[in-house]
Amino acid sequence: MARSFDYVRYPYVRSRDQDAATPAHHPVVVTGGGMAGLAFAVDMASKGVPAVVLDDNDRVSVGSRSICVAKRTLEIFGRLGVGDRCLEKGVTWSAGKVLRGDRLLYAFDLAPEEGRGRPAFVNLQQYYVETFLVDRFRELGSGGPRWLHRVTDVAPDGDRVMLAIDTPEGPYRLTCDWLVAADGVKSTVRAALGLPFVGETFHDCFLIVDAVMKSDVPGERRFWFDPGFHDGGSALLHRQPDDVWRIDLQLGPEADRDEEMKEEAILPRLRAMLGEDAEFAIDWASLYTFQCRRLERFRHGRVLFVGDSAHTVSPFGARGGNGGVQDADNLAWKLAAVLAGEADEALLDSYDAERIPAADENILNSTRATDFIAPRNPAMALFREAVLDLAERHAFARAFVNSGRLSTACRYPDSPLNTGDGAVEDGVAPGGPAPDAPVRIDGRDGWLLDRLGGEFRLLRFGEPLDGVDLNQICVGRDIADAEGFVASRYAGARGVTYLVRPDQYVAARWIDPVPAGIEAARRRALGHA
Image (spheres, rainbow, N blue to C red):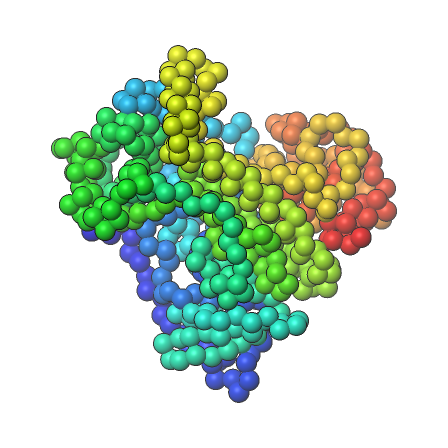
């Protein structure tokens, strides 16, 4: 198989911890150097909190894997300092087509409304995202992950966690105050703690291929139900950077995994799809079955699970990698506040309160998509055919066609960190992500989310409030809303004020609040009763 990406082999480096007479201790250890673990570590480093990242490999993920980076994740990456790199390298898209056989059912466009800083989606192979995060982690003075340091055992012990680690030079141990498990669907940490991973495994087998090919096909999502080139299955096509095309083909529950992974089995399928005259090379291939499972809780004392170690979903809808990065975004500021003494450990319980509903939403959407794409019984198959029949002729039926409900930002309307609404009828309710908007800062064009940054901020329409010990961003004084998008999206009128959390979610909003009310809302957002 060809290789379109030059995988760097990161060197194993002996740590001084391996020479310590007693186990070395660290405030935070992260197991797993994938997207979620690296995003968390970069976030912590940006807040001045060192985190040790242990990875059992010596390179980033092989193959494209999670490729669709959603707008919310791009906003997070912007705050972490890798957003522009993702945009520059990735393939921006918003349009898509859904086909039945060789006929177009309908087309769609997810382009966000005017005045948004990030596009709806960027296609970018996971190995690029992880490389950018590794580089950023190093830029922040971490020295990078510890490659080829494999966690073999985990033992919580009161106010710390003991880890056993194996390396090319033998084993060692260390302890930490907090362990963040980002070690994937086959999590060693989860297994060591004996935690059940509850949910459903679907039996249909799917072939996933990265093919290198020159083509003038536009960068759009194309999904086929029962295409002529792959009778009886579904197919998905995405353009990626470097002339790499992502292809997913449904093979059914009876597929022979060993046989289907042979190149002589893959090539005829690709030729049928791409054309006999198409010139392409296989870059990477894999087989998978859908899983929709999660832990009952994501916090277990001083061990916290993020990404695929906490929950896993089918790939249709781009909810796996995006969900993992958003886990890290939710957890990092909370753990940093606990370590800084600004919040009690109780704040970490809100990680479960907010991210479990988010995981359940992703699992629900993934399960419904899987049931539509690969019906499990005759009744489901009959429903799907009826919907597809109607969708060809009637626009209303297209809402029922499910080729994967694409990832959007999750909301936390019932979060214990929210303060009740302050009589603002429109705008952004507490628990919602702060929307971006174009602004002018010191005479230069910019974006609101960049100005909000990664700390508690007060966004206010009107003059600054006296007696408030928070960084206030006043529209008109600190930022100019020349195009009116800030006022439109935040129901901006004189006196309207928002408290924005470090993860850029709204914690409270008011009309002309008093300083005591703002401080009470900030304390509530930090988990104080």
